[in-house]
Each structure stands twice: as structure tokens, then as C-alpha cells.
Length: 386
Ligand SMILES: *Cc1c(COP(=O)(O)O)cnc(C)c1O
Figure 1 (cartoon, rainbow, N blue to C red):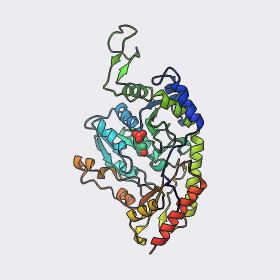
Figure 2 (cartoon, rainbow, N blue to C red):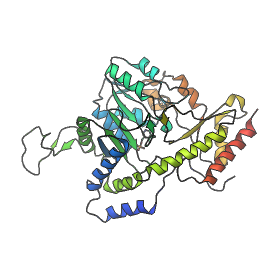
Figure 3 (cartoon, rainbow, N blue to C red):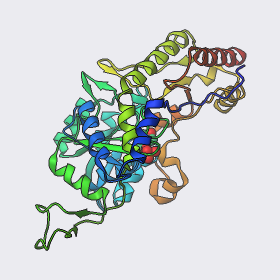
Figure 4 (cartoon, rainbow, N blue to C red):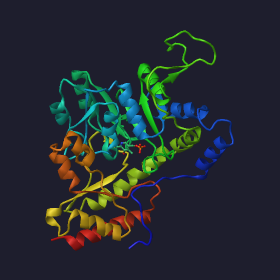
């Protein structure tokens, strides 16, 4: 058994990342300075979108996207239950109603057929989440959106660098949101980004990020009164990212490809070894897609095991392997249950939740770490097979 605890995810920072931050600390602008636009331009270029808006975190990115999509009271937005709560919470922030469409049992992503079944006259948008880094079926989702005139906001918190049929995630739909939390692909401590290729949407996002205030003379409602003049046009927030964070983001973005390559290597090793286990199901890869492997989620066939999911989880923690569960279906949380979701059941999501375990995966893992995970999982499996 390994001596130190191996977390399920963590950042990779080098000396040049630290230097990039130090430079900003010595400069004139700690926030609202030049690093923000530089990071935005580099990120937009990386994913293949026209515009990018840096923002305080991934949750703020989703909130801003829902605002720019015009979500308001009475609107319904379809999303997946197998996600972090923020994907759905962002709809509630705008007064809208999240509607949960079940997942595909093989890809763990939102099932386009379930999206269709969930559409009503109130549906305004769809928030697909690229679970674990595997792209959702964007062609089909795009078709549905077109047919019903819906806005698509991709939650790509797991999917920096993932590609869908030759296109990187971030340049496909109306808006795509990202997170730069330390467990995600690249980090700014806290941070997020929204990408879009629609100029009008871009301007709305900029407004929302900074109190709804603008100095853009083209946007002013009243007469321009002088160089000090600005107007608040919307109820926005202070969701700005600092230049300190943006500098770190720029430096990290240079390494994104290296990080993702390593994640793919680790996933490949896991799949090779675990593919031979009869009571363990490795994550399926969609044809034509390349996951960026934010998570490596296995499912276990507990019918053939002597232990429960909780036992399995705890045995691995005892082995110092930092497993995790992604995710508790969002509608099961007490907040959602007491706010009208008590009777919601998505069978595939529940089934998935009762069998899944996320194994450690992050680019800084050594081959020794990978071996430790493999040996521990095999050991626990072997001990518990009927
Ligand atoms: C991390 C995450 C978010 C939220 O991002 P923060 O930067 O932590 O606010 C949203 N959705 C998903 C799927 C995530 O994994």
C-alpha cells in the first residue's frame, strides 16, 4: 500500500507559472489590466471561437451564459442530473427552471432522445455537460436546438481540449463555459471562461461580468456627458477575473496540450488493464470523439461482488487512493427535493450513481502512482469477488 494519499485530481504548476504571476504582482494592474484580454484572445484561439470572456469561476461562467441567453422566470432549461450542481443552479439564479433529462447508460452524457421528451413550450435552452471530458452528441443536440429554436450552452468544465468530430469543444454552440478550478485541466486558482462567436452575446457577457455597467458609447441610452461617464444598463455582478489569475491562465494554457496528452496516456493505461476485469466496466469512448479525461470513472458490477459501493470506496481510501463519486444526481439534493423535484427519477442516472467510482487522474501522476491505483483496485476486486 502506498504511504501518501493520492488525490483524484490536482494542479500542475511550474516555475514559469509562478514567474508569470510575480510579473503581474510587480506591474501596475492587478485587475482590469492587459492580461485579461491577452488570456481571452489566446483561449478563444485555442478552442476556435471568435470571443472569450474571462470570469471569476466556472459557476459565474454558467450564470453569465444563462443571463446572455435571456433565461428568466417561466423559462425551462434542460440539463443532465449527472453533473456538478452549478450546471442547474445557474438556471435558478436567473429565475428559470432546470429540467433534468436522463443520461445515456453507456456514455453517461445527456441522452438526446431524453432531451426531446423533456421539451415543452417553455423550453428556452439546453445545457449539455461533457461528462468526464467526453463530448456529448453535439450534432444531434444542435439539430434539436434548431428544430425548437433553443439556445445551447455547453458546460465544458471537464472538456478543455476535448474534440468532437475534429472540432475542439468551445467553438461549436452558442456559448461554452469552462472552469479553471485546480482539479480541472488548467488552473487560475478560481476562474472560468465563456466562449462564443456571436458579437451580441459577447457584449452581454461583458456587461454582466462587471455590474451591467458600460463605457461603450455605442451602448449608451442617455446622452454622453463627458469622459467620466458610464451607465448601468443591466443588473450585473462583479464577476471579474484578476490579472494575476489571467497571467497564470495564459501560462497554463501553453501547457494544456501536454497536460491533456498525459491524461489520455493515463486513461489508456487504466483501460488496458481494467478492460480485462469482468466486474469492472471501463468508460466507453464515442466514435469520432477524443475525451480530454477530466475524470476516469469506472462502474462496478456489485451484483457479483461481496461488498457495497461504499465498502469499495472506503477500501480504496484505506489504500491511500483518493477515489471520488461523480456525481450524486442533482435533483436528489435536499434543496432540489424541497423545491419541486421530490418525484423526479432518472433511472439511468440513479443506476450509474449506484455503481460509479472516479479513480485518480491528473497529469502530474507518476507511473508509480498509476501502478498503485491499478494494484489497489485489483486487490480490492479480487478480495470481494464472489
Ligand atoms: C467545476 C464545475 C463547475 C463549476 O466550476 P467552478 O469553477 O468550480 O465554479 C461547473 N460544472 C461542472 C460540470 C464542473 O465540473
